[in-house]
Length: 188
Length: 188
DNA sequence: ATAGTTAATTGGTCTGACCAGTAAAGACTT
DNA sequence: AAGTCTTTACTGGTCAGACCAATTAACTAT
Image (cartoon, rainbow over all chains, first blue to last red; front, side, top):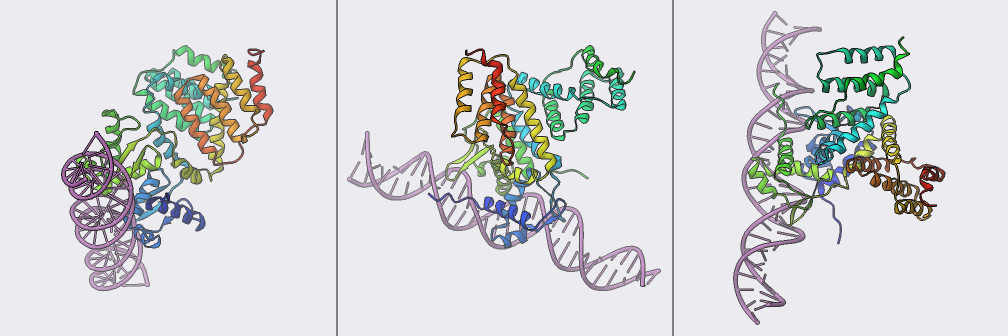
């Protein structure tokens, strides 16, 4: 009846509490595994199970010989991890393509681009050494950076990675130029 | 120099590969820890570190005495934990909200809804027993289902789970009704 | 055939050991 | 006194084995 949680889960909560209450910040070093083991009255193996779990989530980072450090979460490692599971079994590749296009269409609707960005775009389109995939990627990368949402960019990149393993998805050259028309006046 | 990855990470890949290639489906039982240990030539503790990590992710489920089961990952247990760390950053919070809205806005633009779907939506909005979060969730769930893209739904759900750990999310009642106006003619 | 008992299997946890890097302390040289 | 080298201590990484707890499978007696 008692929903006794596992030790590693308790350790997880403890670590979470510890980080909050003791005010650990990204970059700080956490107590060593052995110390935590004593401190939390759990075997080192249990402590490790908890640590490995949140390491996988990208919350901490461990360096052998040095210690365990609280990480800067901006890297969105967890997103990548979740994606590896979520995107993987997306049997219907069209769904992935569609989802990707939603994001692309969104960033295309930025209000304005800087002169430099437009120049970048023109260069990309003119570069004949690039494959269509590369072209597509670089083209939209400019827009995603203009948009500024790091999370969005991360998700899009992952979608890009996963869809590359399938087939191409580029549009015709004309498509990209059409996209640019809208901003063209800015440079002429 | 060699970026030797840790054993538990190798085990992680192996398990992932195993799941893919051997065609495990949600509900299936994975090989036991001891068996995996032999099969992957790693200590049981290392296998456990990997299993515990993906258990936290909600990929698998373990029942003592029974075994380890692949589960249908609707419920990412890690979300709450992750959110408590990652969402301390206000920029990430905003990015998440924005990304979620992009998806929501997209599914709102379906061509038409069935009578039944419209009825569902009306009922949801009228149900005063629902919290604003619940209302928001159910409301859009109808649209996502109407859209049909499973991947999109899954991504949105994840984002939704995350943002439930924040406050502010719901719109005013009027917002939802306005959304419905567009389809109103269908039912009258 | 059924119920009850036993054995085998599975996850949960702990202990202790050893390796492999890193950092700190100490000893030595200049 | 400053710098260099060596040793020590500490930290994570990994392994082997043991025992407990819960479930399932096998077996046995009714």
